[in-house]
Each structure stands twice: as structure tokens, then as C-alpha cells.
Length: 462
Ligand SMILES: *Cc1c(COP(=O)(O)O)cnc(C)c1O
Image: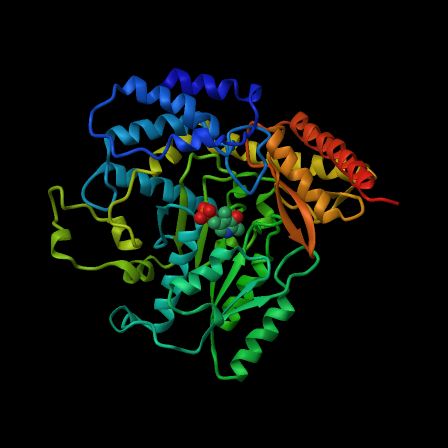
């Protein structure tokens, strides 16, 4: 299995990034519950022939869709060890929890979080954003809501129009409702407009509402923009609001010395959500939540079930029980693949790799600017480039370009809308991507664009 997987990764460039799934393949996955044993060799063959070739392709260097990480070898091997160990990291007296907390401590150091801050691994930033909001909500409304439920209160919160959908979803899931979340417009750099934010807060106070929470973004999902975190931290402190930072894709660029200054102010966040499975290249899934005030974090989740009784010694000992810091009780040893990744490559090399991905995005932007038939649609801050092929009915043609790129297996960009214009979006989130891969994407886009325009003209009678 190991040889097959290593060989498959080594030869990844020889295969299409993605290929359409024949219905005969999909049909294989509707069988009855297996009653009799099969040889593991046969099952592995099924994996090789019918599962491995039909993923989305994010380990391929020309996968640039959405924001999917490429994974890494050390992390992959650690996953095998972790599965063999089969540790349950809800709590108790075990070194795996010390490993998780060691990685969390590295992250505390990286982001300048103080002693007394807390953190755990979670599936991803969607859950990390929700945990940040839960702690902020309970801090604002008091612990009695754990018993009495969330009152239809007067709390209001603020995020930018470029925020990820998981922020609004968190308000829904936290029982506060999305109606209390104000959407603040962004400036030319796709950052939250600070004047508009201040006005919205003032207006809510005049209405006797209670502003309590700002969700800033470090790396917006559409274009990779970073809010002005220092200014937001200052404003949050002056207004006594909780500052949460959704750093899902961008926070880990802190490892790259040339990009870290963009994140200035992140050290002042009350809570920070981020992923190691995007630019951090740790295999899925590996999200993290850090909370500045560990006591508030603990008080949001800890409970006293008798079967989880703690002892001073024995297996039920252990001082830090992760189940006190989030909604999960049984938890996998996600931290091990991150621990291996940081140790095997080192933070410096990981920072260089992230800087390289972002430099490739700048290279791509420069190529696009130099081509009269291409248009850059948003400034490039980190690893995301939004552009389009110029033609009549550009939305339709660019949609077609992306579909054909994907279905031909040449490259997988995705799409988004920038100021109402359909954009081809390339998020360079794979450590295997090189400048030749960027050239191939650009040239194929142009070739397809011209061919599609000609087809279109033929179809339209003059
Ligand atoms: C990816 C992303 C999320 C969601 O993170 P998951 O790990 O997919 O749950 C949230 N916010 C931003 C800005 C993202 O890019």
C-alpha cells in the first residue's frame, strides 16, 4: 500500500489533474453490506482502480481550485502511525495530548498569544469560527445561558462582505441568528472599510443594541485579502468588542518572514481560527482554534459528567482535557501529522514554501498583466489570483474555459464573482506547483478562450 501510494504521488504529473467519473465507476459504490470477508489485497486493488483515480486531484501541482492543500509525505506517514495507535484525544492521562498541546504551544508562540491562552485541533476553520463565536457569546451573555438558552437579545456583530460563509453560519448555529450580523463593505483592497464599521457600531448603539463581536478575515476566500488587523484590534479595544480573526487560509503565512508583517495585529485577537490543511500542507483535516482567555474557553464547554470523572492520578488523571474546550468528546490524534510536518520540514522551510506559493501568484499576476487578452480582476495579496479572458460575453466564455480546463485534466482552477464579474480563480496552495504549471494554465486559458470565441462567432449568424 505504501509503495503504491508513494509511486502514485511520484508520478502524479503523468496523470490528469481530474477526470470525469464514468457512471459505471460510480455504480460500483452501491452494494449491499458485505457479509463475508474479502482479502485485504482485493480491497486494496479496488482502492487503486476505483477510488484513487477519481479524487478531486488536489495533490496534483496544477490543482488550483478553491483552497485545497497538497498534503505531505511526513504527514501521511504520521496518519498511519496515528491510526495504528488509535488514540482517543478527548482527555485522560496520555502523551498524545501533550503532543497536541505542544503543537498548540508552537502556534501560540508563532502568533504571539499570551500565557493563559488555550487551543485545540478541530476539523477546520468552519468549526473553529463557531467555537470562537461560542466563547465570545457566552462571555457576553454570561454562563447562565448554558442552562437557560440564548435569549433573543440585542447583541450585534460585524464582518465584511468578503467574509467566508462559515461566519454567518456560525451565528445561525450559535442560536444568535444571522440577522444580528452586520455586513460591512470592503475597500479597493477587499479589506473591511473601517469608517463604515465605526458608523455601523455607532448606529447600533444609538438604537440601544449591544455590539459585541467583530469577525476579521486574514486571507479572504475570494481574493486572499487581509483586513487591517491592527486598526481593527484598536477599534475593538476602544469599543470593548471581541475580535475574532478568521485566518483559515492566511494566518499560517506568519511562517514566511516577508508576509508576516501583513498579519500585524493578529497577536491582539481574542480568538483565532486557522487551518494547517491549506497552505500549511498538513493532510486533511487539521484546523485550530486559539482563544486568548483560556478560562473563558474552558467555561464555555466544560461539564461534569460522572463517567468523565477526573482523578489526581491513574488513567483518569491528566490536567488538560480537550473535551473541555470544544463540542467533541472522542477526537482523533490529528495533531500527530502536524507535529511530524513541523519537525520533519522545520518552520523555516514551511515558511519558504508558503512564500514560494505566494511568489508564484505574483508571477502569475505579472504574466496576466502582460497579456492583452487577459485581465486581472483583483489585487494579489497572498496565493490567490482572479482573472478572466477578455471577450464579448465574458461570463459565459470564462465559465466554459474553466469547465474545459477541468474536464481535459490540464488544470483545475475554480470560479468566483468579483464585482459581479465572473472570474477564473487560481489558488496556489500546493507545494508541488512550479512556474511551468502557471505557464500551462495561462496558455491553455488563452488557447481555449480564442477557440471558444471563434465557435461563438460561427454560431452567431451575422
Ligand atoms: C476555507 C475557509 C474557511 C473554512 O475552513 P474549513 O477548514 O474548510 O472548515 C473559513 N474561512 C476562510 C477564509 C476559508 O478560506
